[in-house]
Amino acid sequence: MSLNLLDTSNWLPLDGLAPGFDANKAPTVDHLAGRTFTVLGDGGPMTFTFDDEEVDWSAAGTAGSAAYEAFAVAEDLYYAQWHCTAETALAVSLILDLANGRALYIGARLGAAAPGATAVEHDFRPGTLQGFATGGEPIAESAGLIGRRVEWVYSPVHAYEHVYLSPTWYTWQCLAGPERGLADTDSNTVFKVRPGIFVFTWREKVIPCGSVTIADHRDVNAIRSHGSLFGWDETGTEPVHFTFGAHGRLISVSHHSPELNPAG
Image 1 (cartoon, rainbow, N blue to C red):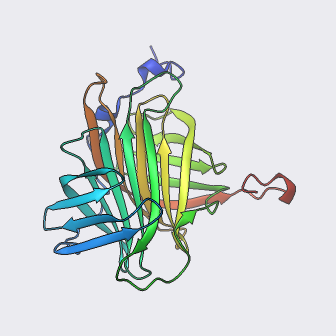
Image 2 (cartoon, rainbow, N blue to C red):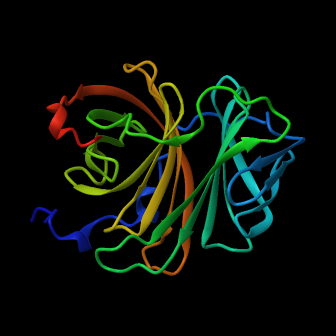
């Protein structure tokens, strides 16, 4: 008997997706080791000190130490990610643009799963880097992805497409892998970091999870992303957190009538 894809109780839990999903993850880098960064913003200063393996931080009302992974997104642009050990319902993403003296903190907090609601909430805090000269535009929410349809390949067996609909919504469809045939429309938030480079976050309502990614779209035929997924395991009692990467390409762009443009 074929699987009823409309029955969401059949959908794969986050821990079932994890094996092999990270095959296209980029190598981590140690470029942040031995450095301390202070981010200045509306919520007060946030401090992050990195060694070879762990980060000590004080930010957004939390503090602690945890193992981290760091990825080089572009020249002098880094994405660091960690899961808190003392507060397991929290995962942190930090975007550091050293060339322009700017940063973006994203705290992902895991709450109770409920039908039709998202279990993960994201706390976005852009700011500037103390001691660095600022350049370019501030990191801010963006409509720059709206209308694009992108194919993403996460591993030799995992592939999805994203359709970026509006400042609030995007649609995903699994093209290959254990979720093949599944699709949904979920909430998203997008920030522009540099021209052609975007932070894309989403929060799913069927599987209790959320994601933070950063992607370089400057070459639409060779898009590169780095990201993390954070949510509950199949039992709903243990957090699941892992990092991944993907290679993408632009499939198409929708052009709406100006008065009907969802970006407006």
